[in-house]
Image 1 (spheres, rainbow, N blue to C red):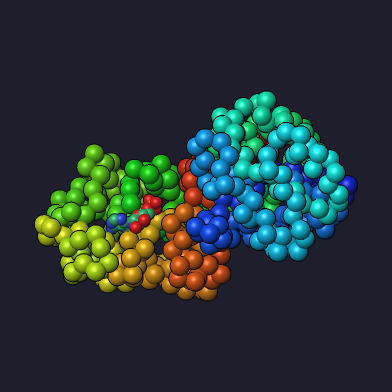
Image 2 (tube, rainbow, N blue to C red; image 1 turned 120 degrees about the vertical axis):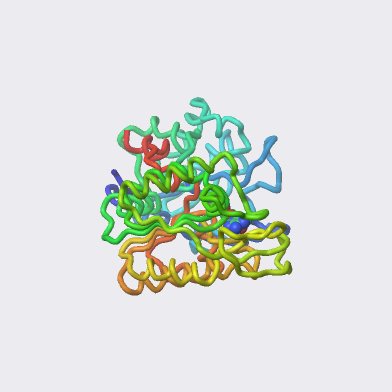
Length: 396
Ligand code: AMP
């Protein structure tokens, strides 16, 4: 893996794919700048070397070409503040203006290109579009782990125009380092906590983890498919009817491989999918009709926490309940606390991106775990053992 530490950027023009797909409010203020701050170490190293930077990113999902709503111009001011230098902006990611601005860019200057996804060619991974982008710099850096599982023009296809001059940014490198550490060099006991809405989204990862972990904790909405498959009644809780057989198979496989698979024993139920609904705590396999499980119960919190307290490596992907609603956040919050506690005792904890990262952020515990991934889908696919196009393109 060639990282940006392998090159001095003095006099170079680094064309960097970043993931600045940040959430904006209706006045176009950035409501969470984590994706930008995550790329700062890479940008600062290149500027400190005396390089110039041309940034490429997407923002949102524009359908039909340029719109103000999805313009990256909205992040220029904040990015300039973070970098301590006025960032230039090209209001088209290709074409004369972009070429001109990149040509006249001086060392230590930064140019941000307009949203790549204003061109359909980006997501289609079109070679001619990638080639046009490639003309804007003489070194290619990819630091967009969040989109590394996409074979888009700027994330993968473009790399072929930079033979011998393509590098992993620090964020990409550390994402891969941390995922590899958990998957291939875990200190034991190794515990994975899986949660979230659906079993179907996480089957491949669960199967893969059964070859790796000592304990597999399953919570969140997906646990009810297991409870039903095992003969429980689950009321109106989330159910993937066609995944019951699979759930039983996973339980069997875990047993055969000597993995301790731990499911919730009790559940916070509600009579409506609503923060103000009536609630109760019952056995997970005895949820009455008309009620749905929206969080793990107190006994389950105690069981799961004990397993985490005795773990040396923890991978967490997916919330334990509907953590977006205050009355159903307790299970997820308790797990976050248990992960933080285990980390204090020396465990290595990796929080998978997406909703688990959002949950840890909501509870203000991001700095108390070992690593919070910035990649949702990308991390899942990497851990499932898939080769990510963005990673492959840099390595080949
Ligand atoms: P995922 O993207 O698969 O990690 O799923 C995350 C979503 O699952 C979050 O929005 C949670 O609100 C939701 N979720 C977790 N537990 C439950 C549950 N028991 N019932 C319904 N939704 C849930």
